[in-house]
Length: 308
Image (cartoon, rainbow, N blue to C red; front, top):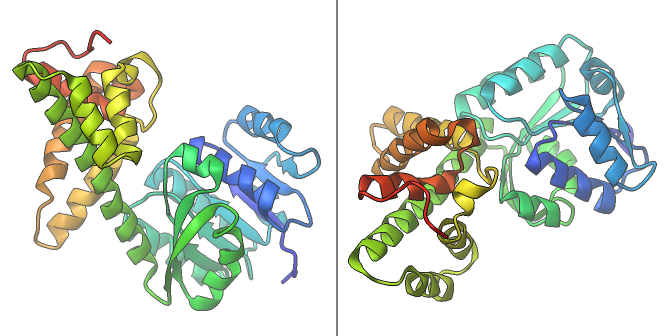
Protein backbone atom coordinates (compact mmCIF):
# COMPACT_ATOMS: atom_id res chain seq x y z
CA UNK A 1 0.00 0.00 0.00
CA UNK A 2 1.27 3.46 -0.88
CA UNK A 3 2.88 5.37 2.01
CA UNK A 4 1.10 8.51 0.77
CA UNK A 5 -2.35 7.18 -0.08
CA UNK A 6 -4.76 8.58 -2.61
CA UNK A 7 -8.08 9.53 -1.03
CA UNK A 8 -11.57 9.49 -2.50
CA UNK A 9 -14.43 11.40 -0.88
CA UNK A 10 -18.00 10.35 -1.67
CA UNK A 11 -20.92 12.53 -0.57
CA UNK A 12 -20.73 16.32 -0.56
CA UNK A 13 -23.54 17.45 1.70
CA UNK A 14 -23.01 20.19 4.27
CA UNK A 15 -20.85 17.96 6.45
CA UNK A 16 -18.86 16.40 3.63
CA UNK A 17 -17.86 19.73 2.10
CA UNK A 18 -16.42 20.97 5.37
CA UNK A 19 -14.58 17.73 6.01
CA UNK A 20 -13.06 17.79 2.53
CA UNK A 21 -11.94 21.38 3.05
CA UNK A 22 -9.93 20.39 6.09
CA UNK A 23 -8.39 17.33 4.46
CA UNK A 24 -7.19 19.59 1.64
CA UNK A 25 -5.94 22.36 3.93
CA UNK A 26 -4.47 20.31 6.79
CA UNK A 27 -3.99 16.75 5.56
CA UNK A 28 -0.72 15.31 4.30
CA UNK A 29 -1.90 14.82 0.73
CA UNK A 30 0.65 13.97 -1.94
CA UNK A 31 -1.95 13.57 -4.66
CA UNK A 32 -5.25 15.40 -5.24
CA UNK A 33 -8.25 14.49 -3.12
CA UNK A 34 -10.66 12.73 -5.48
CA UNK A 35 -14.24 13.99 -5.26
CA UNK A 36 -17.37 12.14 -6.32
CA UNK A 37 -20.96 13.18 -5.85
CA UNK A 38 -24.14 12.00 -7.49
CA UNK A 39 -24.61 15.62 -8.53
CA UNK A 40 -21.38 16.31 -10.39
CA UNK A 41 -22.05 20.05 -10.26
CA UNK A 42 -21.68 20.01 -6.49
CA UNK A 43 -18.28 18.32 -6.76
CA UNK A 44 -17.12 20.80 -9.41
CA UNK A 45 -18.33 23.72 -7.28
CA UNK A 46 -16.44 22.50 -4.21
CA UNK A 47 -13.28 21.79 -6.18
CA UNK A 48 -13.32 25.34 -7.54
CA UNK A 49 -13.47 26.76 -4.01
CA UNK A 50 -10.54 24.77 -2.66
CA UNK A 51 -6.81 25.18 -3.22
CA UNK A 52 -6.05 24.77 -6.95
CA UNK A 53 -4.55 21.39 -7.81
CA UNK A 54 -5.46 19.82 -4.46
CA UNK A 55 -8.68 18.17 -5.63
CA UNK A 56 -9.89 16.35 -8.73
CA UNK A 57 -13.47 15.53 -9.69
CA UNK A 58 -13.87 11.96 -10.93
CA UNK A 59 -16.50 11.23 -13.54
CA UNK A 60 -17.69 7.91 -12.13
CA UNK A 61 -17.79 6.18 -8.80
CA UNK A 62 -15.92 3.22 -10.28
CA UNK A 63 -13.08 5.45 -11.46
CA UNK A 64 -12.74 6.94 -8.00
CA UNK A 65 -12.77 3.62 -6.16
CA UNK A 66 -10.26 2.12 -8.59
CA UNK A 67 -7.79 4.98 -8.15
CA UNK A 68 -8.15 5.40 -4.37
CA UNK A 69 -6.34 3.71 -1.53
CA UNK A 70 -8.73 5.11 1.09
CA UNK A 71 -12.42 5.71 0.40
CA UNK A 72 -14.36 8.07 2.67
CA UNK A 73 -18.17 8.15 2.59
CA UNK A 74 -20.49 10.62 4.25
CA UNK A 75 -23.97 10.02 2.87
CA UNK A 76 -27.52 10.91 3.86
CA UNK A 77 -28.97 7.58 4.90
CA UNK A 78 -28.60 3.81 5.06
CA UNK A 79 -29.98 3.25 1.56
CA UNK A 80 -27.43 5.60 -0.02
CA UNK A 81 -24.56 3.91 1.83
CA UNK A 82 -25.74 0.42 0.87
CA UNK A 83 -26.10 1.47 -2.76
CA UNK A 84 -22.59 2.94 -2.83
CA UNK A 85 -20.96 -0.08 -1.20
CA UNK A 86 -22.71 -2.51 -3.56
CA UNK A 87 -21.44 -0.54 -6.54
CA UNK A 88 -17.94 -0.10 -5.12
CA UNK A 89 -17.56 -3.83 -4.52
CA UNK A 90 -18.03 -4.49 -8.22
CA UNK A 91 -14.39 -3.30 -8.53
CA UNK A 92 -11.27 -4.94 -7.14
CA UNK A 93 -10.99 -3.41 -3.67
CA UNK A 94 -8.27 -5.63 -2.26
CA UNK A 95 -6.18 -3.75 0.30
CA UNK A 96 -8.28 -0.59 0.17
CA UNK A 97 -9.65 1.06 3.31
CA UNK A 98 -13.29 2.15 3.51
CA UNK A 99 -13.95 4.84 6.14
CA UNK A 100 -17.69 5.25 6.67
CA UNK A 101 -18.69 8.55 8.33
CA UNK A 102 -22.47 8.52 7.81
CA UNK A 103 -25.09 8.28 10.56
CA UNK A 104 -26.69 4.90 9.88
CA UNK A 105 -28.15 2.01 11.86
CA UNK A 106 -25.56 -0.23 13.56
CA UNK A 107 -27.00 -3.26 11.75
CA UNK A 108 -26.33 -1.52 8.43
CA UNK A 109 -22.81 -0.70 9.56
CA UNK A 110 -22.08 -4.31 10.46
CA UNK A 111 -23.59 -5.64 7.23
CA UNK A 112 -21.61 -3.38 4.90
CA UNK A 113 -18.43 -3.93 6.91
CA UNK A 114 -18.85 -7.69 6.49
CA UNK A 115 -19.31 -7.28 2.75
CA UNK A 116 -16.27 -5.00 2.41
CA UNK A 117 -13.96 -7.24 4.45
CA UNK A 118 -15.13 -10.31 2.52
CA UNK A 119 -13.76 -8.68 -0.64
CA UNK A 120 -10.29 -8.24 0.85
CA UNK A 121 -10.61 -4.62 1.91
CA UNK A 122 -10.52 -2.98 5.34
CA UNK A 123 -13.31 -1.06 7.03
CA UNK A 124 -13.56 1.56 9.76
CA UNK A 125 -16.85 2.87 11.09
CA UNK A 126 -16.16 6.55 11.72
CA UNK A 127 -19.31 8.61 12.36
CA UNK A 128 -18.70 12.16 13.52
CA UNK A 129 -20.34 14.48 16.02
CA UNK A 130 -20.76 18.13 15.16
CA UNK A 131 -22.76 20.58 13.07
CA UNK A 132 -21.74 21.73 9.56
CA UNK A 133 -20.02 24.77 11.10
CA UNK A 134 -17.87 22.40 13.19
CA UNK A 135 -17.06 20.38 10.07
CA UNK A 136 -15.99 23.60 8.32
CA UNK A 137 -13.78 24.54 11.26
CA UNK A 138 -12.26 21.07 11.70
CA UNK A 139 -13.86 20.79 15.15
CA UNK A 140 -15.73 17.51 14.82
CA UNK A 141 -15.45 14.55 17.19
CA UNK A 142 -14.66 11.34 15.35
CA UNK A 143 -15.75 7.92 16.61
CA UNK A 144 -13.52 5.21 15.11
CA UNK A 145 -14.28 1.50 15.42
CA UNK A 146 -12.74 -1.51 13.74
CA UNK A 147 -9.48 -3.45 13.85
CA UNK A 148 -6.72 -1.41 15.47
CA UNK A 149 -4.55 -1.56 12.37
CA UNK A 150 -7.39 -0.25 10.20
CA UNK A 151 -8.23 2.51 12.66
CA UNK A 152 -4.54 3.43 12.58
CA UNK A 153 -4.76 3.96 8.81
CA UNK A 154 -7.78 6.26 9.24
CA UNK A 155 -6.59 8.32 12.21
CA UNK A 156 -4.20 10.69 10.36
CA UNK A 157 -7.25 12.32 8.76
CA UNK A 158 -9.19 12.91 11.97
CA UNK A 159 -7.68 14.63 15.03
CA UNK A 160 -5.86 17.75 13.91
CA UNK A 161 -7.37 17.59 10.43
CA UNK A 162 -11.15 17.05 10.33
CA UNK A 163 -11.62 16.65 14.08
CA UNK A 164 -10.64 18.22 17.36
CA UNK A 165 -10.93 14.90 19.22
CA UNK A 166 -11.51 11.19 18.75
CA UNK A 167 -13.31 8.43 20.57
CA UNK A 168 -11.01 5.47 19.97
CA UNK A 169 -13.03 2.27 19.72
CA UNK A 170 -10.26 0.17 18.18
CA UNK A 171 -10.97 -3.56 18.13
CA UNK A 172 -14.61 -3.02 19.06
CA UNK A 173 -17.40 -4.16 16.72
CA UNK A 174 -18.04 -1.72 13.89
CA UNK A 175 -21.67 -1.19 14.83
CA UNK A 176 -20.75 0.07 18.30
CA UNK A 177 -19.51 3.31 16.73
CA UNK A 178 -22.84 4.01 15.08
CA UNK A 179 -24.67 2.92 18.23
CA UNK A 180 -22.82 5.70 20.05
CA UNK A 181 -23.53 8.14 17.23
CA UNK A 182 -27.26 7.39 17.09
CA UNK A 183 -27.61 7.66 20.88
CA UNK A 184 -25.51 10.81 20.90
CA UNK A 185 -27.86 12.44 18.41
CA UNK A 186 -30.78 11.85 20.78
CA UNK A 187 -29.22 14.49 23.04
CA UNK A 188 -29.67 17.03 20.25
CA UNK A 189 -33.31 16.07 19.76
CA UNK A 190 -33.95 16.20 23.51
CA UNK A 191 -32.30 19.62 23.74
CA UNK A 192 -34.42 21.04 20.91
CA UNK A 193 -37.59 19.54 22.38
CA UNK A 194 -36.90 21.02 25.83
CA UNK A 195 -36.08 24.45 24.41
CA UNK A 196 -39.21 24.47 22.25
CA UNK A 197 -41.52 23.49 25.09
CA UNK A 198 -39.97 25.96 27.53
CA UNK A 199 -40.18 28.89 25.11
CA UNK A 200 -43.83 28.13 24.38
CA UNK A 201 -44.72 27.96 28.07
CA UNK A 202 -42.79 31.18 28.69
CA UNK A 203 -44.71 32.99 25.96
CA UNK A 204 -48.08 31.61 27.01
CA UNK A 205 -47.49 32.51 30.66
CA UNK A 206 -46.37 36.06 29.92
CA UNK A 207 -42.64 35.66 30.54
CA UNK A 208 -40.48 37.50 28.03
CA UNK A 209 -38.85 34.74 25.99
CA UNK A 210 -35.72 36.89 25.68
CA UNK A 211 -35.26 36.51 29.42
CA UNK A 212 -35.46 32.74 29.11
CA UNK A 213 -32.94 32.95 26.29
CA UNK A 214 -30.57 34.93 28.51
CA UNK A 215 -30.72 32.12 31.05
CA UNK A 216 -30.09 29.49 28.36
CA UNK A 217 -27.18 31.45 26.92
CA UNK A 218 -25.57 32.12 30.30
CA UNK A 219 -26.11 28.70 31.86
CA UNK A 220 -25.69 26.37 28.86
CA UNK A 221 -24.38 28.45 25.96
CA UNK A 222 -23.13 26.69 22.84
CA UNK A 223 -25.65 24.64 20.90
CA UNK A 224 -28.41 25.43 23.41
CA UNK A 225 -28.07 29.16 22.78
CA UNK A 226 -27.76 28.64 19.02
CA UNK A 227 -30.98 26.66 18.78
CA UNK A 228 -32.76 29.06 21.13
CA UNK A 229 -31.77 31.92 18.86
CA UNK A 230 -32.88 29.97 15.80
CA UNK A 231 -36.31 29.57 17.35
CA UNK A 232 -36.86 33.09 18.68
CA UNK A 233 -35.64 34.82 15.53
CA UNK A 234 -37.89 32.71 13.36
CA UNK A 235 -34.99 31.19 11.44
CA UNK A 236 -36.65 27.78 11.76
CA UNK A 237 -39.34 28.83 9.27
CA UNK A 238 -37.59 31.60 7.32
CA UNK A 239 -34.47 29.81 6.09
CA UNK A 240 -33.48 26.41 4.76
CA UNK A 241 -32.88 23.53 7.16
CA UNK A 242 -29.85 23.47 9.42
CA UNK A 243 -30.60 19.88 10.47
CA UNK A 244 -33.24 18.68 8.03
CA UNK A 245 -36.38 17.06 9.37
CA UNK A 246 -35.99 13.97 7.16
CA UNK A 247 -32.52 13.27 8.56
CA UNK A 248 -33.66 14.02 12.11
CA UNK A 249 -36.52 11.54 11.80
CA UNK A 250 -34.18 8.92 10.34
CA UNK A 251 -31.93 9.29 13.38
CA UNK A 252 -34.94 9.12 15.71
CA UNK A 253 -36.16 5.91 14.07
CA UNK A 254 -32.74 4.34 14.48
CA UNK A 255 -32.62 5.36 18.14
CA UNK A 256 -36.08 3.99 18.88
CA UNK A 257 -35.17 0.78 17.08
CA UNK A 258 -32.06 0.37 19.24
CA UNK A 259 -34.08 1.00 22.39
CA UNK A 260 -36.77 -1.48 21.40
CA UNK A 261 -34.19 -4.17 20.63
CA UNK A 262 -32.70 -3.61 24.08
CA UNK A 263 -36.09 -3.87 25.79
CA UNK A 264 -36.13 -0.19 26.68
CA UNK A 265 -37.65 3.08 25.52
CA UNK A 266 -36.40 6.57 24.71
CA UNK A 267 -39.54 8.49 25.59
CA UNK A 268 -38.09 11.92 24.86
CA UNK A 269 -37.22 10.68 21.37
CA UNK A 270 -40.75 9.43 20.87
CA UNK A 271 -42.11 12.85 21.82
CA UNK A 272 -39.59 14.64 19.62
CA UNK A 273 -40.33 12.39 16.66
CA UNK A 274 -44.05 13.06 16.98
CA UNK A 275 -43.31 16.78 16.76
CA UNK A 276 -40.97 16.18 13.82
CA UNK A 277 -43.84 14.43 12.04
CA UNK A 278 -45.85 17.63 12.47
CA UNK A 279 -42.94 19.63 11.06
CA UNK A 280 -42.84 17.33 8.02
CA UNK A 281 -46.57 17.77 7.51
CA UNK A 282 -46.23 21.56 7.73
CA UNK A 283 -42.98 22.15 5.83
CA UNK A 284 -42.14 18.95 3.95
CA UNK A 285 -38.47 18.13 3.46
CA UNK A 286 -37.61 21.82 3.87
CA UNK A 287 -38.46 21.54 7.56
CA UNK A 288 -35.78 21.97 10.20
CA UNK A 289 -35.36 20.16 13.52
CA UNK A 290 -35.87 23.53 15.23
CA UNK A 291 -39.34 23.51 13.69
CA UNK A 292 -40.27 21.44 16.74
CA UNK A 293 -40.80 24.90 18.24
CA UNK A 294 -43.47 25.57 15.62
CA UNK A 295 -45.14 22.22 16.34
CA UNK A 296 -45.15 22.93 20.08
CA UNK A 297 -46.58 26.38 19.38
CA UNK A 298 -49.44 24.90 17.38
CA UNK A 299 -50.26 22.45 20.17
CA UNK A 300 -50.54 25.43 22.54
CA UNK A 301 -52.90 27.33 20.22
CA UNK A 302 -50.26 29.59 18.64
CA UNK A 303 -49.28 29.90 15.01
CA UNK A 304 -46.52 27.58 13.76
CA UNK A 305 -44.54 30.65 12.62
CA UNK A 306 -43.65 33.16 15.31
CA UNK A 307 -43.73 36.89 14.62
CA UNK A 308 -39.99 37.47 14.98
